[in-house]
Image (cartoon, rainbow, N blue to C red):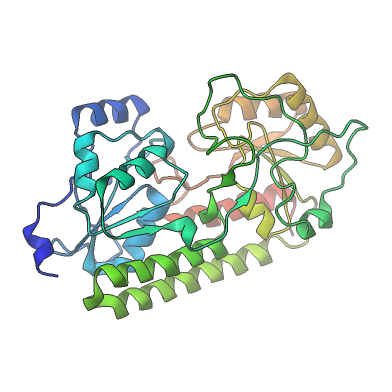
Length: 360
């Protein structure tokens, strides 16, 4: 693998623990400053300066590469901390530099700019997350129930895996021309697989194999690290299963439908204000439906995210006399995150859900 070190490294910014604005990202992309420089991270062996150059599309993919690659890799993310990953734009120069990476770890369908750049870059080795696990549809629309809606979620939602989670009510279409975070629109597969620890473990094992292919000299280490990470994720799954037992309700309300996989895994029912797009404005009819859901399903909390949905969540909560709390989709780690890495934030999410669902 010595030839890697003679090549000019991609220019990816070193992750910093600060929030960055979307305006800052757009400006960086326009000036070519958000390049692809390799970076090491704490807790992964430091990221060797002469190691394998790995480019990750956003934090959940970066976390896998760091944990599995350990001291053999230098990992950089295309997205600055605190910036919505869906807003990423890449210049032609950045696209060309992407082709110089030894491995790109990404999730197809989550960031259109990355999908296009990878196709154009000609990069040899890619680890595409959705190829390692099965995607499902969530938050793709809301089913109308004209005669009112009895509290039907319960065990039905645990058994009817993937059919109604994140929906349950009809929602008016988004404004014409609004694309945002809809990942392909109504009926599109939900990309938020990392919020299900079991599916994320499947992706981790796939990334381990991709690293082994890109750097055969350290293949055994990558597979060992991937197995260890998958085991930690299965332990997290066990914590969620145990922690969410004996709950008062199965239903939780979120700002947008990012938690469909998590709901499916643990027999819960997610009701979202804004579907898959966290920036869309809910209709008046949708807000009325959520009022009914909250009453019928004994919901006492409306969740928003650290980076989106706070205003709408608080409006709904104020109308109903409910409290608000944070449920983090773990798309990035910033100073406002309730934890310093994926596991810490997910365990914070578990505690927030336990409180909201009345788990004992």
